[in-house]
Structures are given as structure tokens and as C-alpha cells.
Figure 1 (cartoon, one colour):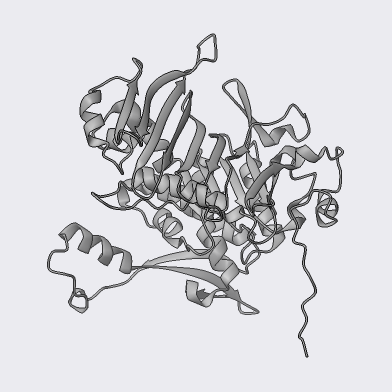
Figure 2 (cartoon, rainbow, N blue to C red):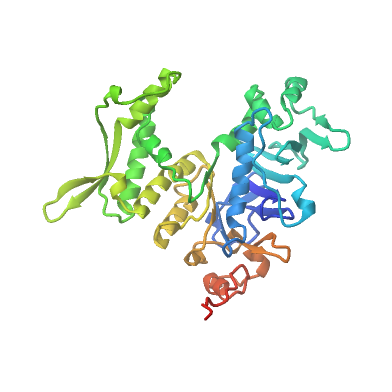
Length: 427
């Protein structure tokens, strides 16, 4: 589970900012929290702010961190970091990323700093369960010295395995964490797997039907999983009031001769592509008054229907597998009531018991409901005098218990709203 995320000198973030999912001592909506180790963590967090205030950049920063970890750069390849550009000093300094999270029973603190050319610093600490004192185990630290052009390493005794070989593989633009996972260091692979398997990032520009599609059409060896997925996703589509009565999955014959693959395409890849092309997903509507079933392709459905279908798979995976979802513009193409139900699904203690979490950015103020969210679950982004993003929780403004958060936000009580001048045409 995600505990906190820190980012600094990245895009609109000049100074380091921290998003924390550690719950306050407030006892309201206690089911929106979950005990994890010695901490109480929030199941969901919403981020509000005007356009261009940094909401999307916060989620993009997490995505960039995940990409650098899981998609190891090739020799000489630039890293996808963009520093704060609005002053000369920061534009020449590295960007920083750090995540604190639980994986299994262990709390980890992992981070790095990087420029487009190289990894500058990297560190990993662990806090195993059962220790009488909350003192970190240092697994490794890495620090690049610009004056000497050399990297200093500090390996703790808690990290096992061949360290010198790993160090040699962590070249300028490669993280030791990534190298360790690639070369099967058991401890580092365990940490790496949280980023690769337990975090899902969904941005509005990235349509993700493949996840839901794959859950419904998986291999025969995953028959039980396929049946569970079909039952839940089918029921979600029925309950969402799209007029859909069910999902149909059908296979059709594919003429292999119609498809030309590059000569070096592996047979396994060819077979996978052809298999996917042979499967069709259709939505079943009912014609009235005859009651006849009419099948619609996804392209015949509305944007909202397709968007909900795309989210259904990742949502179900998060709940069943205990994943952390980060969603930008969660309200895109969806009615506010649908978004509320998705959030309630994640926060429902009776359904979601595996540690699923949701971090989302939105402009939908109808979600600012004291019956849906605690005060520590709402965060704001706002630009300061340097045009840099500042991140702050609603609890900093000390709202009253049960306060009408939507009204207070739109009235400007918490800041983080656009100050717009009237649009006019001269002449």
C-alpha cells in the first residue's frame, strides 16, 4: 500500500512536495482507512485545483518514476525527466522521486534523483515488521559526485547477494533496483514487483480497454479467473444504467492469409495477435417491446460506456489484488454518480479487503461530500509566486466536521480555484 509520494524539481514542481496517505487521528468515516503495520492509511485520496496547477503533473511524476524503474534504459538512452524550467538553477539540477510503501508486511522507502543523462542518487531502506524500534535498515545508497565524476556506494549488511556485480550493471542511466530485478536478486525483485505489479496509472489520453479485454478473454488455464472477471464486469455494466443487459464474447474465423507479418516476427507473437483478432466483445441491449437481444460493438457505444468498460477491469484487479490506482481526470466522460460508485467500490470494507487504494485528480466538486470523504482525503494543488506547484491537504484549513466542502471550495475558502477575468473582444 502507498504511504506517501515525494517529488521535487519535476515539471511544475520546483520545491519538493509530499502527498501523504497517512490518516489523521480523526475518527470520522473510519471505514475509509485501513490498518497497515503501525500506520493507518487512507483508501482513497482526491486532488483538486485549477487547470495547469499541477494535478496531472503529480500523477505524471509517479508514472515517470515507474517508467524509469520498469523500462530499463538502453546504453546512452536519455531518461524521461523534465526539471522545473522557470529558473536557471533548477533547470540544471536533477529531479527527485521517492515513494514509501508497504509490500507484504515490510515498509520500504525508495527513491532516486536523475537528470536526462544519468541517475545521480538512489537509496533503499526497509522497516521489517516485528522490530521493537522503528529504525530503518539501509539496503543501499548511491551518490554521484559531480566534481570527481564517480559514484560512491554504501551497501548495508541487510542486502544479500553479489553486490559488486550489481553495481557494475547499474550504469549511468540504470537504477540498481532495476538491475537487481533483472539479475534475480530476490530482495530487490520483491521491491521492484510492487512498482511493476501493484501500481496502475490511468491517464485520460491513454485508453486502456486491453486490461478489461484480457481479463474477459484470458487463456483456458485461467478459466476460474476468467469466470470471476466475467461475472463481476458483466454485473458492473448492467448496474451502471447504460441499458446493457450483458456482455457477449464470441470467436470468429480468421483468414491467416489476410495478415502479413514482418519475416522476423516470432511465431508466439503471431499466434497471440491472431488469437486476439479472432475474439469479439459485444454489448447486449434489449429491444422493446419484443424483448429481442441486439448486439452492439464497443464502437457503437457512447464514450461514457466505453470509458466505464475500460475502467472496470483495472478497478476489479485493484480490489482483488490489492493494487494502487492513480487516475487522472477520473470524471472524464462519466456521470458524477458513476464516479461516486467507483470510489465507494474501492472504499467498501466488505468488498475491498486486500489493500486497494485510489489516488485521483478531478474537477468534479460533487465528490466533495463529507459522507464520501474525510477531510484528510482531499488535497489541493496551487501555483505560488514562482509559478511552482504547491500541494496541501484540506485539513490544513481546519474545516469544521461535516462542513459543506463543495460550497467552501467553490467559494474560494481553501484556495486552489482559478481566478478568471471576463472574456472580451476588443473593438
